[in-house]
Image (cartoon, helix red, strand yellow):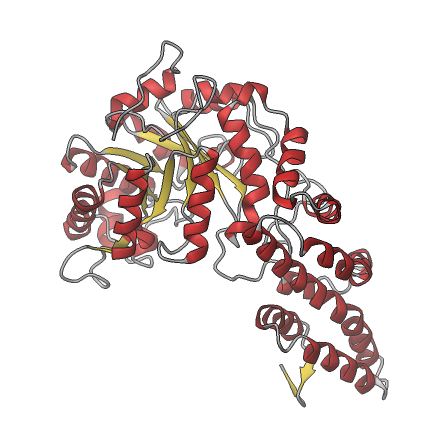
Length: 485
């Protein structure tokens, strides 16, 4: 792979990455110059051999993303339980790695020893370290991976294994730091190691006196200076991220290289029951963060093609942060995805208004607040229930118009999620009515139940929508087929 020649404008953070990782990746045919971020990364976010994942990767590559974040479980297996004879890489991942190298995309693999072992990892047991080292070495030899992130994100902050407690104390922070330090000393010199701690944003660190934060901050100096830190900004999902935010974080973290893990559009859930997409453009990102971070990661939601509107705007920001205009970027993204059909463009503009709000703002609908279980728990919220009334009235026509949208994968995923919402919208007022009649002891509750069953039958031929509808009805405790669901 030919490396891009560093320019005189290359940022300090990017130079730090050069020092720790053997050079920055170049993108074949990339038009991004000195104005853009050096490392513009996106998550693989799916099985390497899945058609939707392959579509997603090709789409992102064309937008100028030049690096790919891969979770260890997407690359292979290494734990004693799953790979007793030693680490194994997935053949589909190896094919993807070869393709990525041909197209100038650098691979970064995130290994989470606690999550990968379902909480059974013992930090004081040298076998776990040996297995991690073997896996990292195999990734380099067979897949050309030279960027490893040792991750402890969303893992417990208190040790449970007695041997670990005797060695490190109560907090997991000393154990995390010690494992990173040991691996750094054992890895081949051309592999760059990064750390994603259990505290990965300003909010997690707080005043620095917490069970994890205090020993973590105190122990950072024990790590080799080349080891960078993965960071999400002020919050896990940050409405705004400024240069000042990240400069303050870097100072607090000992001036280490910083990797910005930007949780937008956000959506790693395996539940596959989202009832809205994140259709907002990237907002609240200071152009000056380019000069503070060594790498930027965009995090698509599932379904992957449903992230295209947000990813189009993120790519614009990464390519030219100083010239980025979020409103103009959203308009260009809508035009690209909808194509020449005026009806499709108008329908997408309307849907974008409904699902395109800023982080933590109105009309921002991540999966954890808009799913069938959450909807069933809000049946006694009149405003929430009323918001589904116009879904029944307006979605059919809007969906018919969107059938003519130009981007087929995006159209497919958007309509699938809209059908989920429409199915629940049709059942929701009936569900509220039925439950009210049951509470009142009315004898005519069965009439409404029959109408709910009719809605369910209407969606029988749509496995995806009927699955989500069943989750809603189950949670609302609606009896179907003569028995409680």
